[in-house]
Length: 329
Image 1 (cartoon, rainbow, N blue to C red):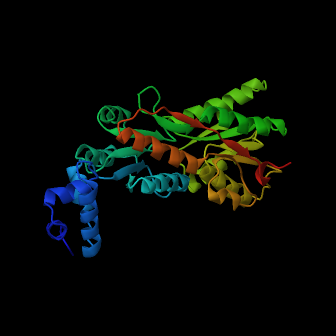
Image 2: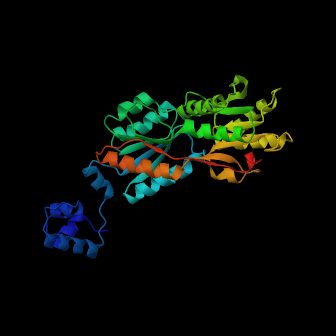
Image 3: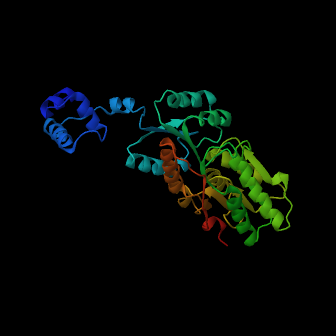
């Protein structure tokens, strides 16, 4: 493999001149630039991107922080981020945090040590104080889950309004006893989606019953099954369930079917996210569709602009209530 010294000799210029051409500097004449480019083609020279990035104090790497790789919700967002990143000559590094502050700090150090140029955080349990401090010096964007009022731009939807619409749909088709399957309220999205649930009931003159609100430790399929068992055991059993994620809702569907009950005849179910699996259930799942791919592309564009030193504003994207068989009359 040819090196930069051989290119310089072939073109009859100095190594410094070749370097200036490779870095796109305008201090080289057109004639000299053409000679260098011809020498590069003849020798099939490939410059070291690592060396070039180190000289420019950049890594061309973007970190994506997610709590769990196994959650399908993140897949389309990651695709959106990756496509924009590649189109701008960046690579992505997927970082599974397990919502563990020690693991998070390892990834944060990659930015501090200039081994990555910026972070897109999708971890709802991220240490907000650390993230806020880091954002004073480095490019950071929050995606999906965010900490409001901390000065870090974010991409999200209106979670409260989305939940309101979902529960309103259940009310409009005749349900008045509606359970909420939620996760830990230390997460902002859990608090916002509960607020939408409560507002929809109150707007229709229905009191919120604490015994109809169930919390899960995680967003897994099995967590939805466990919560559904508790719901089915209530004496004054609800006739509908709104789950704050599709994975919980799909677990609920499984448990309802196992109990010999019919969906939606005995129990209507609505999920949240519109993951691919939500159209493969029996019956198919009514759900709130988040524009995951668009969220990813928006977050990546915002981060790249931040890396360049630009200012960006937070973005709230539209959502859609996708009505399917699990709430069909």
